[in-house]
Image 1: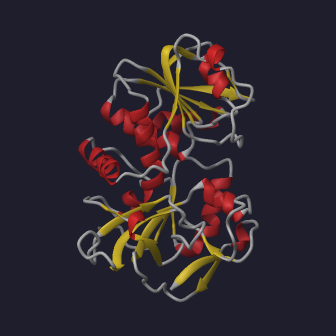
Image 2: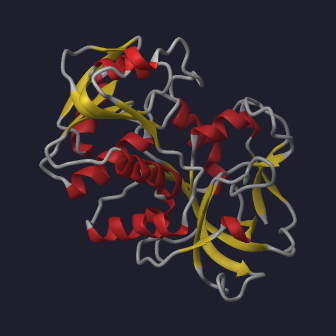
Length: 322
């Protein structure tokens, strides 16, 4: 099979297309024929050598959509079953989805019922699952004033699309370090765009709910812009800071503000199916920013790392039908 093998960490040039043996099925694991997958920032970090636990050579990729090619669980994962896999240790402890086939533990493979096209399916898993969990964590109401901090990210755009599909009249504000993408954000569903300079929101406005995608670097500033009894859901770390320092809960959360998260590592078969049902029921417009072929993976990584990235970039290995 063809796969993207990273022999050693580095820039996009280390993403090499190679012919490698197709994985052999073993007990408790099944083989997926990969139809597509999204590109994630964590894969860029791993490629750069910033994931200490990862050993090379490695095939990256923490998510995929596809069909069961060989199975060790005929009842739950029959041949030809449409499946999704996200998170776990794929692409880290063992080879991931940047390939024509991927061998995964059965516990990490989720069968789904859907009529969506492969390009739509490949756009959804990690990004939209995270956004959907945030949607639930924020306990949204139609009258809420909502802020997405780090709005141009894939999760930010996905959240806007999920929110507006159910609550089209809600007022949604997005923050960005540059207003150059303001029109793109409005087209994605944002009603207003505000500037975020050096971790400080350039506004006096306050919000009922905040989806914090920059992370620990800006959480305290986000709380300052949260109304009494409001909720901040921190579920991204785009700011490159992993821990919250010098945090006084009594002072920072005064006004009965709530701080929570949406951790996509807690994958549930039921919640994942809920997400796909939600997308079909509310006719959510799920579209990738760009579609690449497997051999164009270096271009996809370069796009994600550039200032031009907006939304979700995917790799498609199959024609666009289910």
